[in-house]
Image (cartoon, rainbow, N blue to C red; front, top):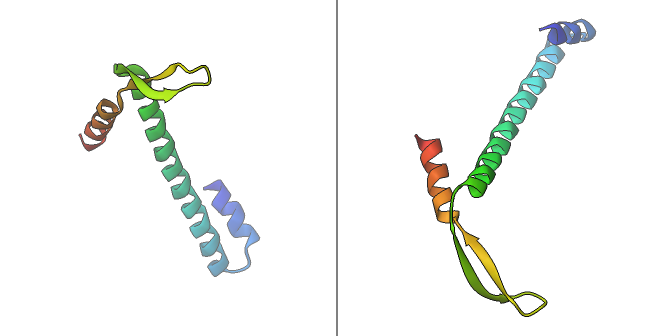
Length: 87
């Protein structure tokens, strides 16, 4: 509220004050959206670390000719993510 009072004192007309407040509210909602997106990514990352999966040997080879191993838990992480955000 103090910020809006300071902005109001600096503005010459009521219309410009309303414009500045609209920009401030749009920025706040954008920041809130970013917070939700980052929290979702962090949640999925934590699930990826915590949820058990199976180790599978793939057909791709590394530089030494050894087959690469893959940790498969993506379907479980997806189902838990969807269940959490729907429930």
